[in-house]
Length: 479
Image 1 (spheres, rainbow, N blue to C red):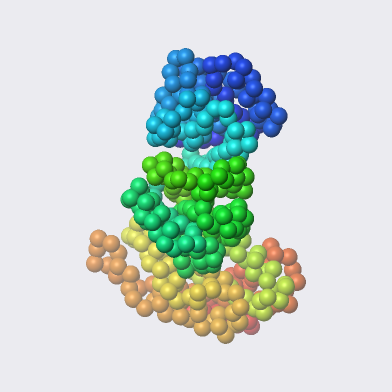
Image 2: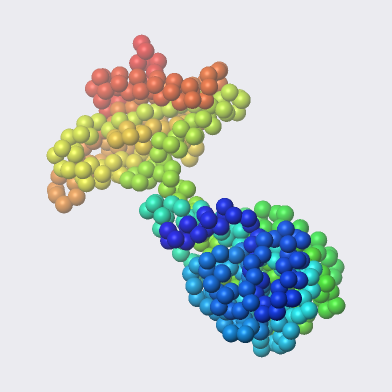
């Protein structure tokens, strides 16, 4: 894991867009290098399979252009070696051949090639495919880095791939034609759930609808709407989360490069080769599931970063950020009031002293659970430190704040706490100090947190001095 992270960081420091050209003919390598350098790509070159594998492992190119015919091994074998190595397995590979046939193409895709192109190479399509693959590679590298950095320091587990059925939605105009098309896809890809929608239905998908993993735009939609359908789908928050593949009508092959540059991940052609479509779409879906798993892991890490690991409540760092937002809302007039409760668990030290810290941890966890149940949906509960907690109540005046504080006192004291492994039951209580800030507050955002928490803390001390298990507001404390 440490090596992979170093490699990712190393790759981000150097020039983006380094391409390894593998061809046994010097003239072919020179021509390709000239075209790529004109497009501002950095180039490496190899004339055989073993040199290509060595360069890929040591230089970590962003993409590999690989000829099928090499003097020591064919390009498919090279691709297979690259995919078997954890360092090089994610590098995009474009295979090309002067004698490509269907079986070669299918085998290349099975061995992990991202595409298999026929010579002479179509420059426009080649550059479009390179740009598309590099964009996808950058997204994967960024997601891996976000998740990998905390993992190196033991902060989180690595992302795990999803084990769910993939969802494919075909966007079409003709329901009858589409039904036959979907049946063909279902037979080729039984592991996939396939549904049909019109373009209007797809664009109107809302947050309550299950979002597909992949949209496949059928040829009849391309004939009617053109490639405008691609930015239409990718410009919406919901539909841009899915991968996008288009199927070009016969005679429209030249649109492939433009479709890739507009954001399509894959381009299929009529008549549909179901086996080839299966291989291409399955690769895209596998990559998406990995990316989704990384995103889920990243979001989990973000949540862990703002949570207290014992109680699951928000931590002091998160509390400070939220109070800055509240201060801004007070100053702008969005909020008229905000209340803060500072809560202390009475005589908690005796629990640790008598029964040990494990028992104390159990008590804190149960207290946190009870307090959460007593709050409003808009309230923010955080562990402030030790046995102290803070509740921020946006929009609450002193009456509402005192009502919630009294409810917290009741639920904490309502039932005894059982010490694990014994018959001992503890009756515990909390003391609470309440302070309220109105919209007239004119200080800075950092001053707001310090001021209002300080007032609530003064009220808390008064509650303790008054006998504990009670609520004291700042006005009462001052009096």
